[in-house]
Structure formats: C-alpha cells, structure tokens
Image 1 (tube, helix red, strand yellow):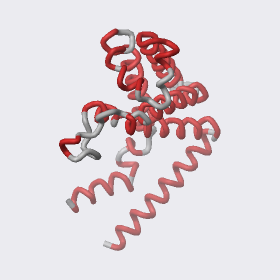
Image 2: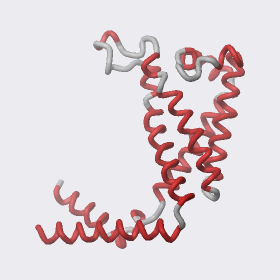
Image 3: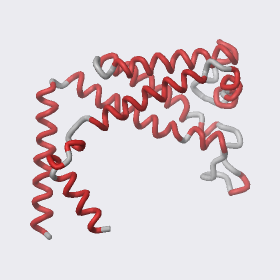
Image 4: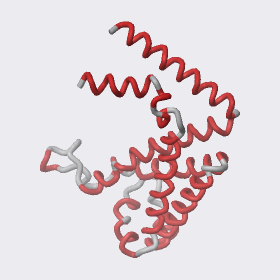
Length: 193
C-alpha cells in the first residue's frame, strides 16, 4: 500500500509528469457527463412508462408535488423533460459561454435539490424488515444517485462562477500557486523520509 501511495504522490506532487492533473479535464468530464445525463433523463420523460414511474416521486416531493394539479401526470412528465433538456443545453453551451453554463448549473442544482428532498418523504423508503433507516428500499436507493449529481451540479456552478468572474490569467496564477505549494509539500515530505 505504501508503494502505491508513493507512486500517486509522485504523480500528484510533480504534475509535469502527468499533465492530466494540471488540466481542466475533470471539469470538462463532469460537464460532459451532466449534459449526457440530462439529455437521457429528458428523453425518458416523453414516454408513458416514465410518467407512470414518476408518480410516487412527484406525489411525495415537497418541492414538486404541485405539478400534478397544474399539469396532470403526463404534462408533469413533459414539463420535467423540457426542463431537463433546457438545463442540459445550457450546461452544454457552458463549454463556451460561462454565463449560460451558470444558468444550466443553477437549473441542475435546483433539479437535484428537488429530487433529493423526496428521500425523507418517500413512503416505505426504508426497509422495515432490516430495521428501517439506513436500509433503503428501491425508490430511496434510486434517488441516492441524485446526492452525487447535486454535488456535481454545485461543483460546476462554483467552477463556472470562478471562470466568469476571474480573468484567465488570474485563474492560471492561482493554479500555479497551488502547483508550487504542492511541489514544496512534496519536497518537505521527501526530506522527511
């Protein structure tokens, strides 16, 4: 295990050896993944099977329960589909325009907040046969992915706000400071060995 940690340390502390850690690859990967997820989620909403599957989630959602009285079962599904495609499109445009990306990130963040808040209100969401919480049943287990998507949405929003506010030179200057700190920490660690 120590040899693995030393190898990873050398890759992270000396980023010139592996440019992946110095690039924005992670930021672009998260953005592309979120765009793809919203594209696929939005696509599903156009079919009756998905409208039917959403009933327990929307009925028990403290932030989205109002959709059935306003739109009906099928209309609520369509509304969600259009919203998800809109957020995905804005996040896609965020590759080039950070202000549009911020709008998409905010939509994604609200979407994930709306779904994560369903978890405590889902009937029979915790398996009584296993003692209840934290033993999840199907619907709650399905919603747990949205906790990670919430974190990804927040991260994209933070990254886009920084990119929209700070000039590129200042962002790169901060990255270089971080690289120098990591290099100094590596040298200290190497001297301590």
